[in-house]
Image 1 (cartoon, one colour):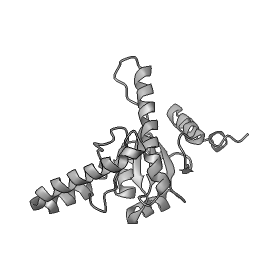
Image 2 (cartoon, helix red, strand yellow):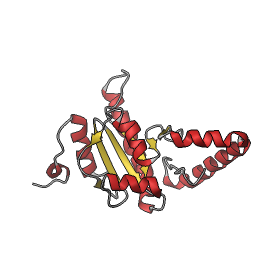
Image 3 (cartoon, helix red, strand yellow):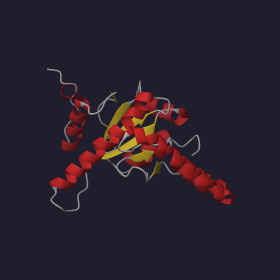
Image 4 (spheres, helix red, strand yellow):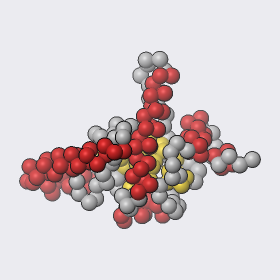
Amino acid sequence: VTEDEPVMTSPSRFEDSLSTDLSYALSQSMSSSSATTSTSSSSTQRQEQPIRPNERNPYVMQITNGIEGIESTIHRHDLNCVVFLSARFCKTCQTMNPQFTRMTRRRRDNDNNDNDNEEATSTIEFAKAEASGPAGKDLGRRFDVRAVPSFLLFQNGKQFGTPLAISKLPSDELDRAIELLENGNEWDEDYVFDRE
């Protein structure tokens, strides 16, 4: 694993994440050392890919390259998406990784159960993006993110509402924002933050 690639932790138990990450890092270093002849071409390809399929977490897309990654995946394809913005140095973000995965898995499972064995596709995608490093800092400035962890919502490829600085999942505010997004409603800050 290189310094440019964030390590995603998504085991069902947080305690298992260390051994999972170590075994993943070891397998990656072994595969990269055996492919030293094609390093320059594969690193070029890796930098050009703004979204990376996540073999370890099929529920959450990994967006790389900051703003470019958001534009080429969410904006270009007019997606409804919830993006978890985190940073490698953020302990709260590391604690929330498995909680975010659990939340997305439950939402997907509920979508599948609601459709009675039909091929179910959720109207909302879930993704994670890194807020540290130059690309992550540009991303944070572009969407006015002031702290991590934060959540960005996109409706039809455009930013939906304001960034939500949430430090614990499950979150009533995030659930209400996702409900508005899923139903195609307008952003209602009073509803999201339960102000009357």
